Image 1 (tube, rainbow, N blue to C red):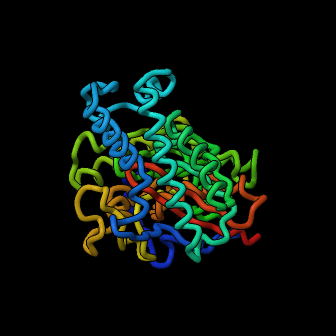
Image 2: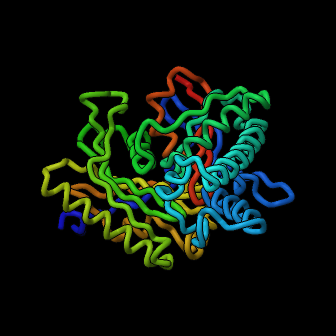
Image 3: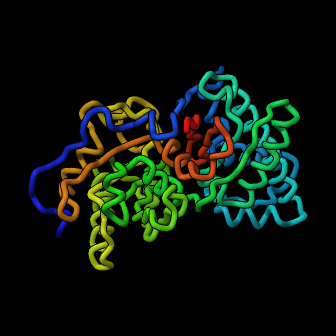
Length: 353
């Protein structure tokens, strides 16, 4: 297969991972970790936190009567199940509205704390992504959060991703890939690693239709819910490599000119050498070990894509998801992104064009 040719290699080099300065944009900060007496502030506004909060509401209800949501634990209820409850006028619906209201208050509190930090102080608009926003429950929570922030006197706009949530963490890589590669090829490979899922996809840049990359599109995507399989770190790397190899074969069959590039979005603070400093507590195994280097591990499996040596870069997942919105953020100077998933990802940006 073309991806496995053995020629001169191009290892991920220094000072290319976790870029902060891009043409027309500066990443002010990401993976911000604020603490209070209960731990990390962001942990109070994750999808995991919402499930725990809902379970507390149900436990209180059980003390005075039956639980209208049944016996299944809140963490095991699907988004579709929760959305159906929300649509009904019933005891279960009232319970759900109460949990959403409390979660919105927690999220507003977290946003207020963030906007008091130097890297977030000037933020005018926040785009909210992550798996939580895929549901009606998540959308209702975001709307209530916006109203609560106004009452608090925190004047910041809240919006949702323009792309599908599963695509944002892939599409953002078109703004981080070397421009020379994009000019010569149709598409790139991208990976988005989360605490529950791994997404791998082919992103077409569509530069001829939109030079600003606003029409970049995921043309093929595979999603693996690794949390169900309980893999170790090695298993994760092997499965990701297999997903990428499948994407290369797809491009060969469809005659898609694939750039020799792989972008990896991953939780945590990414060092310039591509290792991870902190923030991977939701991933299996030790991803912060100096002995572990994910870009090199994947490069060893795929040293060549097409006729060129592969360049593998890594950045924070919230940064990459935020960059998918870059073409639509030209009307503000300072903006940010929150990704509400297993944890709460965050990044803030300043347009410098």
